[in-house]
Image 1 (cartoon, rainbow, N blue to C red):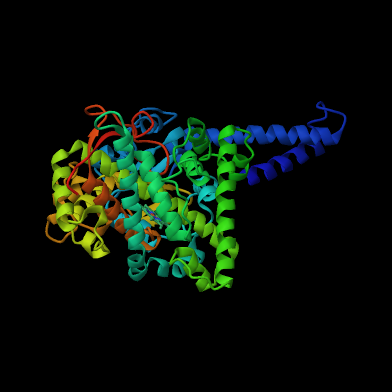
Image 2: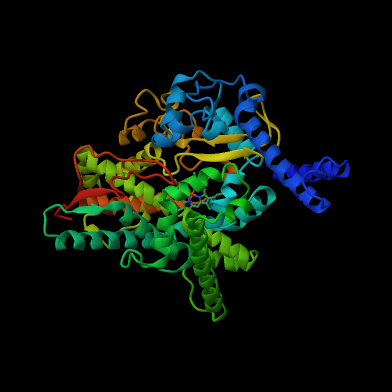
Length: 539
Ligand code: HEM
């Protein structure tokens, strides 16, 4: 649209100069033309912005008439509420309160229209039958693509299908089985390092910050699993890769504002803003890219020398041979980022819920200790051992349902389309909200808002939910998480070690947490997740 406005301004300015309407500006026609073009561009951009901000959503949008919660502000819709609230909370309330047939319309920051699918039928349309019509939004191209690389997460259409086909073998159950010893040994290493910190402390039940531990451990796991490289973030938290991801996934206020501006401005404009937050993202990208390039170079040499290779995702990509170096770098960046902060968030929620629910923690510990009597040194632990601990499975499923690490994500209509028979114009933003769908009483029953691992014992093994599309943690369809099974096995191993070894308590009773900002969501109190931690003897 910006390009069209520029062309229009140039044409209008040419006509104004041609018919001498700008002769009072200057003697020089070049200056007249320039002043005319810039003034018209500014004026038309302002009018266009004003129209889309205040007039179009109130009177002309084809979406008018869809069920909509009353907006508290005529100029900022629900923007202020959304920014202030815990991520996903307003959406949960609307799903309960606003009668609808699968779509709710609301207005986000500066009245940006957002459509929220609320029932399995519409979710299936967006995610499966029309998954290449409802595409990743332009918004992601500046923020996400710059850090995650232009890999599977960002690809569209046939290019996405091609990449997904090449990468799927890396997530085959056979390959996951071969990665399980890595998941287990890293989980054990984390528990041993935390135990050493507890033993060194001068107080009983010292406070440990778990958001950092969960990120460090999952980064070490994904480094090894994706590229065969140990970042050693658990032993050395000052490492480059860890520091960079910390900055990115725990965005500063500056980065949040840049994220908001990103909704309105094109990527080239965003890149040119001389703000520290933009420079931080550029610097983070440069570090991640450099590390990934070095990894690929080293791996190529190892392959040429026929050295024994770790069974990692990069080796599988190289053996397949159909991706260029640039494409492999992008995929590696995607897996590194998508594959560690998400699972880390789930681990943080685990520690938080164990601290708040001592009875559940005790039951889980007993179940784990019964199945793994040899404790952390038990040499017989396999993927089957972990998968067969029923209460562990139930607990992990419930964490992922109740606290989806990605509580909301976006799509955009790539062209005019329909949803449940309603006309959806091109560029309409679609807000997918796992945090709301996963806790909707309509699909999960009246106790949907309770944290209850036992729900997973209900007949059918789906937690009592009425449709696959009611559990949105990994989304569904061709764009669902390719790492779903990988992360579930990794998460179970991490939970088994932590819950088997430790007892947790909140730093202060009913400690207040904030859950907002960023792509993944975790409980945060005073900048981290501080929990009093005790080694439970006998394991
Ligand atoms: C608990 C852990 C995880 C959760 C909750 C999670 C969740 C998600 C979600 C919601 C998406 C869809 C995002 C969107 O399209 O807007 C996604 C996509 C993706 N995830 Fe995960 N993820 C997890 C772990 C992992 C792991 C461990 C890996 C890699 C080893 C991974 C790799 C990816 C990739 C590559 C995509 C893009 C798939 C595509 O578009 O075809 N994820 N994930």
